[in-house]
Image (cartoon, rainbow, N blue to C red; front, side, top):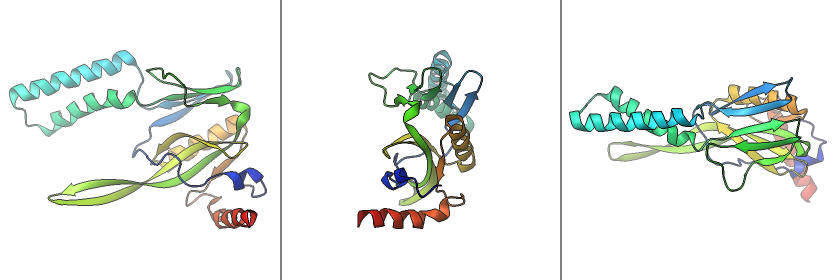
Length: 214
């Protein structure tokens, strides 16, 4: 990380999404010859397939009610078949296209307004930061608060503004996607996760920000 970059001091280094997933939700696909890249969900966004999964799950649920099924395997399969399509409709593909000079989001259900859209030339850096995602479990009558570590991949513009793209717990996967995307876009990676080369610069960065405020 280049500490003399003035955009660093204008960039926020706290978590942006305030949520996360415990499994890798996306993967980066790059077509160098075609001049495009996509952050694609690992859940296949195929409408007929998702509808078939939902219907199969509902049929299996009804069958278990009728037969008074007790099998845990069937119960887990039912939950998976019903929940996967619902979750799939919340995911998006992010396209980076050098032919048009733009990046944008694609969803199964097109939103009235794209929340992710902009010019590739506006991207200054790719940011990777850690966050704690708090969850909870119930043990008998006791509620126990737990957490897991998740990691954000954010785009940073030339003014220090940020845009979250993905957020999940598999650091090695997310870091690899971040570096490949940054190389494709020809921008730096600002990675401040605990074992990154940039992690030791955070105290210096905080001091630099405070010095600029004074």
